Length: 255
Ligand SMILES: Nc1ncnc2c1ncn2[C@@H]1O[C@H](COP(=O)(O)OP(=O)(O)OP(=O)(O)O)[C@@H](O)[C@H]1O
Picture 1 (cartoon, rainbow, N blue to C red):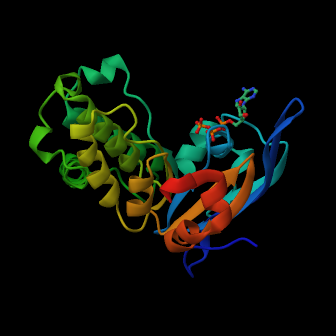
Picture 2: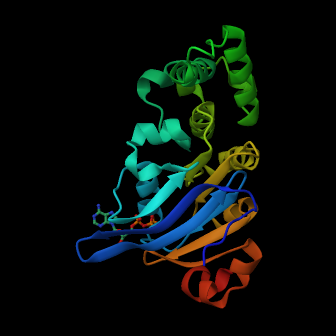
């Protein structure tokens, strides 16, 4: 049975997603709901199908069957960039052109881009001051207020990842996909990324793919365990930590 993390109407409804690569079934009837403000961690052993699921949601992979609705819209019928515009956010690596600009300039462009695509007859374009105010709010959310004027390329790696997170937030996602946000970041810098994840706006629904169990249990209010492409369990962190099957298959003696 599909569980919902909260009582509100789901913003993302995933039903029976299936995908095979040749004879290998990498997604088997994956179903779950996500509501505004949910914090769902996606865990599972290597090759369980976590990235495959994320790729089916972003549009990088096409499921062979099943459905996914984002705020009532048929997500699977949309192209990847249309999914982003519809409210499915994710982080992207910043390209070299944008790394040469300041943090503030990057966010200013992202906010302006969102407003440009949202602009219509009834809603005049925002003023420069309003865009700047939103950039300041994002800088605060991702703890970068002190380096807004610095070039992205001059920042330590962990803080560059925060800029990527800020860029995703600038598009005001309804659902934010975070695939191992602290991966590859030196240990001493990882804490700033974890803090930013803790501080994400409460109304956004977040799916975190993560191998680091400390981060998973710190972040999640609901955990979905994938094994061999199928949902083994979904439950609260306490339920998952106490589940004998999860311990045996995934968490091992560390649970
Ligand atoms: N393009 C592809 N062609 C064939 N098989 C693939 C392809 N991409 C992924 N797979 C297979 O699909 C399965 C699921 O892989 P996936 O990367 O989604 O797992 P994961 O849970 O994200 O693993 P990890 O934790 O190691 O990142 C694996 O068996 C993998 O070998």
